[in-house]
Length: 260
Image (tube, rainbow, N blue to C red; front, top):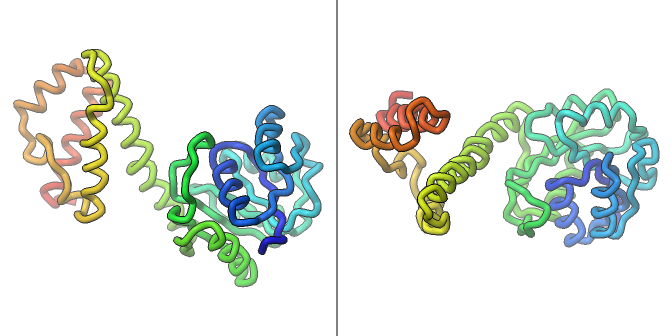
């Protein structure tokens, strides 16, 4: 596997973090394609690989192409690429594997279930990688590639991956947005966000040992209208934050009653 050459389409957070994991595992990164020249050059300097902004100049020596592009531009880039039936893997949660079928005879998916930022180092060994491929031979290659960087490699269909992505949006993106709202509330009252970190950390630890519904606490569980009303007043009746607070509170109460 150490002689395997991988080329990347895209130079964003996911591409950078996955490339760092590959590099650490001894997998050669031969090239990066990016529409942004500065991003391509930065990726190239970090991983000592070639770079291009011209998709027609995709490295012909690369054995595997990793497409880490935004969903909105992926097909446009694939349309212009010459893959020559090399193995192409996309990394998207919401795109079906079959979207690659018109472009190559060998295709699959390697999907990391993790929030990734190019400027924050992460230990990929604990990141779940969900894989899929259009043939048993290709699946073996994808699994071998994935196992070089992660201890947690699982097969998942495109339908399962869509559900994983949706669940991740709730567990990560929405939760982080709630942190942003909390920070805004504290800033307005000259309080530091850091005071919430022990609470955030303990909340995360609890779901390692308890189902989330059982770990839930707060006024919404018992639907304490007195407290909830005061919180909505603080947020401002009719504001987006107040509407969000009320909707989430009702959802928490419904889950706590086992009504779903």
